[in-house]
Length: 188
Image (cartoon, rainbow, N blue to C red):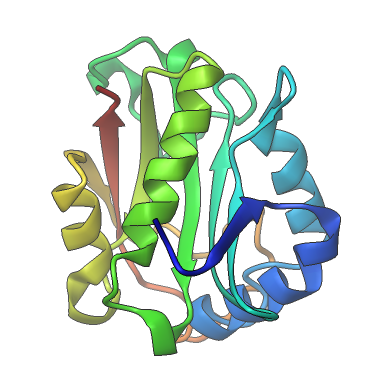
């Protein structure tokens, strides 16, 4: 049981999520339009798979997840290599923890909470594109520890991504060269 408040993402959280997301991932990573669309893609059959975590009034983390069938497969997805049918795969868009709170297992807690909801939606697995240049390769280590299986690594995944046209990577600037490992986590 966490000493922090975990609740479903709602419009009242948008400003805090945008601020923390852009602080951790880079300017332009999230904006009002993007977070509104993410919330819509998070919901299915009365469930919401995206969560926020607060320490009193301070947002300290969030997990953004798309319901199965509510996210588009793109050129960065290889469903022929997934161990489950694509219509039963959810998408883990983003897991973000404030730097002051990292290393405490909070990302794993948010992942487990989201998985519980995604299973209720009928998902059998969740896909993610893991940021391979994260400090200390923490993203890959975290998702592997959770049971994620590597499918394929995609070079320059976020370079000129039309879904985030104003994105400025915290490592690379406007011309992002970061790689993403397509990983799938089969739910037990």
